[in-house]
Length: 375
Image (tube, rainbow, N blue to C red; front, top):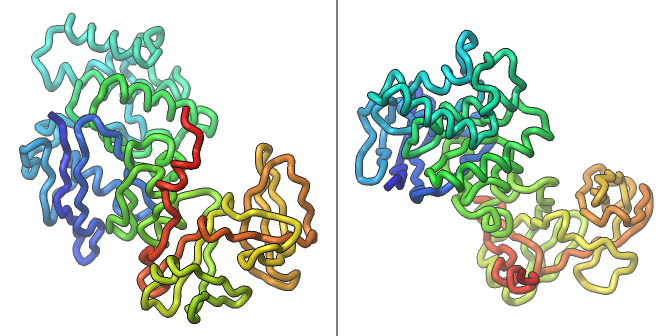
């Protein structure tokens, strides 16, 4: 049993509240990603789980056992740091063996067997007699993972372990980490500021901002049904487009366009007087002619070719300083200065309360799933 529970966990540094009442239930064998901007409290949260930081308020439990007051070595938790923290004078085998030698009564043969097994899993079995200085960054990262794996802990904690790798190797290691975690079926908490890592790796994502938990959900849930404007803007690349609007009867009106609302959407807006309309770049249709009340004339400002797709920055007039982005197919020919029509389908829009930032209306995830072909 390795359910990990964070129960109203708070951390204060003098007058600064770094983590503010975070509560998350992490299931046995789950891969949970803590994500957020720099300074949001994600690494501090991880360090409190590990016992490297004390808790100001709240509790952390592993199963039914409180970890409060327990030293790091008493928590049956293994941590992988951003810096690999390998002993440079030791071989790979010695680095991986050291923790077991210091904290267990296992025989040398048993330790050797566990190290050999972990090294084979990580494809570093041919590197066991080398020193860290003879290894590439990716190989050193595997050694750091192996050092954690041989301990066979109840929980893995990983603090931005891939951030020192180049883009191609980082993508490769993301896949390998997922495979290893699934094979071991060990509860894992993974910290990153990279929302791409969060979306591709996590069973669920916990999004922090300013020390406060904004939302916990599956990658699809936080992407398509964000709890608030912060989550909507943080998750997704390019980011969601936002337009500040005033509610006027059965429509919302902004500086550049008015958007008619259906009865259902107007009801969702409720008593709010000012709202933010959000729409993701891939949900904006770029067409040649306006045929609908949700079609708006625009001018192409900048085109970013990405290969399989193009990010097209649009303005409502050539003099407009602010632009928004639509994503179209990579074979689509679009040129700067070209007049086009941007279609904001009501099925795809999100509406947030401008005062609180809370979501008033999201696109239906169930409707989207039902429209996707099943494999």
